[in-house]
Length: 222
Ligand SMILES: O=C(CO)[C@H](O)[C@H](O)COP(=O)(O)O
Image 1 (cartoon, rainbow, N blue to C red):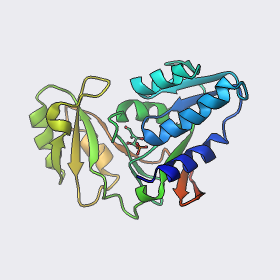
Image 2 (spheres, rainbow, N blue to C red):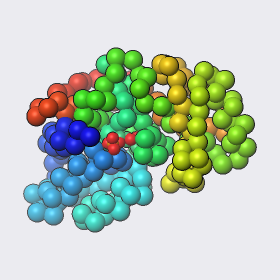
Image 3 (cartoon, protein in one colour):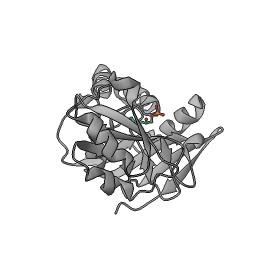
């Protein structure tokens, strides 16, 4: 869905990459358009000396296949490029639809700039349409689920516990009427919770594909 808009947002974001940069590399289908474009520039030699810090094993494999140097070292990341499942007018995000939220948050938090690429359908005035992904330890996970539900949601294990993250944990998809960003700390306090897919105060730009154009929203990292 909206593949052309995803591609347009990724191509606009890619204009901010030049030789000799260290980048955070996100996960998902929109980021794949970005990586495909970056790969072409690297392979053709138009851009050189790119180092990427990947947010998932699949992103690491793809980047390596394009000859992009991979490093698991967070120091000096200039821009992190990633997608989102939903975003609001303040740049708050819901992430984790691809199950990579833990590594995505670590890389985003430690990057100077965080550029999000998305098609227009991901925008909501108030975060509500995408169920909030929460990564939980595979230990007493049914109790963790019940405790998360006390915050006001209905939670389901992704693919009935068949899905495990790159970190070997389960993902709970939590359906709230409205995902208030204050839930990030409330849920994170629950024992067994590894990470919450609310990214607040982290985004610096959102590239939004709208038909054939790209609109850019700017924010300050807090
Ligand atoms: O958070 C993510 C993965 O954990 C992705 O960025 C998010 O799911 C968006 O993916 P896509 O670009 O395929 O719509």
